[in-house]
Every structure is written in structure tokens, then in C-alpha cells.
Length: 412
Image (cartoon, helix red, strand yellow):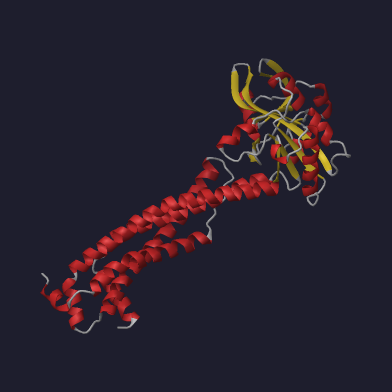
């Protein structure tokens, strides 16, 4: 019997047991849908994070205290006080580092901000005008603080739109004073609604001169990070090397393995995010694949039952000249057709739920989440479903082909 006839016979057999066929593919549909959804959401999350990172610009270099965490045991080393004003002064000397266009330290904390009877717990960021330039966040009302405000440790703040709405409602906030850690600060500017910009939620933050934050809010003399902007993207690797040498000399470090700081460029951050999201996606896909295994076992069990129920049919076909190969092809085609249909349905459902997820995240949760549907997910879904049909359909097909025609015709 040629393959075309085996295929037609398999389709006829499936049509005669529609309910059983539908239940058989259910496990495959669920498994493929889960895999497609996980891969699509994983790709969307990766794109979102990468867009935020790239928002800092390709010339941006971030210096953070402590050695770069390699795992949970070393993560505590990240929280050190190794970056101080002497490092800023050393980095700004052209004799030490050439190619730095601008530089700003950052002091970040979470604390309560209040006005009258209203209060809100939010992010307070101590920085300079460079932060506004890099993130492209400028007040729509009022002004941003100046270098003179930083030198004078001025008690001034710029607030995000959510902070303004929460504390002042429809009233004008510029000129009013808010309280941060029992000290009053004058609002000199309010930022327009911008949502998430790079790694910052602009709407939900209070920005102050970093010297003011150190003097009156944290009471510390160190920085949580230093943001450096190189003159061009081409010289970033050289600038990073010179920064490393300067900080090691400043901190009396001879062995690079003992660095009490780590430097991240945007290219480094992009590669790191891709690696992390890739590992997480593989892990989640592996978990989702368990349902495919369960579905495959279900197909094998139902196909074995089908072989038993159709024993007389098998005996009749063999008595009319069908070979073991013909019988095996028929039942193998049945298993592959079932899993292929389940794979197609799973892909369509996966695409639908992926789109629905991206819509919810972008509209309701207010994230800049774009719908992503990788072709690799489709190929994986079709490939896995066909493989499951072939593997788990092989044993029942073989059992069917080995039945004796005489014994099969006698079966009741």
C-alpha cells in the first residue's frame, strides 16, 4: 500500500472516532500553547529590558561599588562604600582619563516624602543635570537644579508627575515645600508624565542635588553609582580601561581580582540581559514541555486502546492482503496527524494568549511591552508535536502490525 492510501486510511480511522481524537490531542494543545506563550513573553520581556538599557545611550558607562556579583554568596559585596568624592576628582583629571565628556555621581534611596497631610513613599535620587540630559527628562513647569545648587547643597527638588498629583492634586507644586526626612525642600520643577525611562520610573521619583542628599538625607559620603558619558562610542573601551586603572590606583589595588568596584557599559548590559532571559526561557520551556510528555503518553495509551478495539479490522485488512508495514504506517500516520493538528491549534492559541498578555501588560499595567511572536517558537511547536507523534505512536503501530490475522478475526 502506498503512503497516500495509508494516509487516507488513517484519516478515515480518525474521523470515525472524533471525540476520542479530540481528547487525544488535548494534552498536545496545552503543551504547545504553554511553550509558545512562554517563548513569546520571554522575548517580549527581553526586548523591554533591552530598550530600557539602550535608553541610557551607547556612550554611557556605569561604575558601581563592590565586585560584580557572581551569585547569591557574593551579592552582599555589591553594597560597599568604595566610591567617594576623591574618585570623582581623579576621574575628571585629563591626565588620568581622556575622553570623558560628562560625569555625575548618584545617591539613591527609598524614603517618605510628605506635604501637609499627604505622604508617599518613593525613590529619592541625588544626581546632577547630566541625569536629565541622558534620560531626556526636563521639567514642563519650573526649572532643573544647577551646578551652583549642587555646590551650595541647596534644599531644592524636582518631582515626577505621580508625586505631584499625589501631594498637590490640581494645585501648582512649583514654589511649595515638601518634607523629606524632617527637612523642608522647595519644589523648583515638575516633570511631565513619561513612565519608565531606561531603568527609572520618572513619574514616581524625587530628584535632588546629590550633595544635598548626602548632607541632609543619607548622611553618607559615598555614592551608589557614577554615570560617565564618553565623548564618542568608539572610545568607550579605552575610557573603561583608563577608569579601571585610575580607580585601582586611587584605592591602592594591585590585583584586579580584588577590585572594589565594577564597570558596566551598555554593550555589557545587553549581553548580560540576553544571557539571563535566555536561560530563564529555556528553563520555563523545559517545564512546559513536561505537559507535552504527558500528552505523548496519553496518545500512546489511547492508541493502544484503539488497536485493541480495532483488532477485527486489523485482521480483516491483513486477510485482504495488507502487510505489517501497511498496518504500521496507518497507525503511525494516525498518531502523527493527531499531534500535528494539536500543534497547529496550540500555535494559534499560543499566539492569541501572547497577544492578549502583551495587551494587558502595555495597557493595564502601563509597561512599554510590545507584542513579540518569534518564528523559532512556531518551528519548535511543529517540530516537537511531530516528534511526539512519531515517538509515542511507534509502539502502538508496531503492536498493531504484529497481530496475527487469524487470531484477530476470531477476536470478540
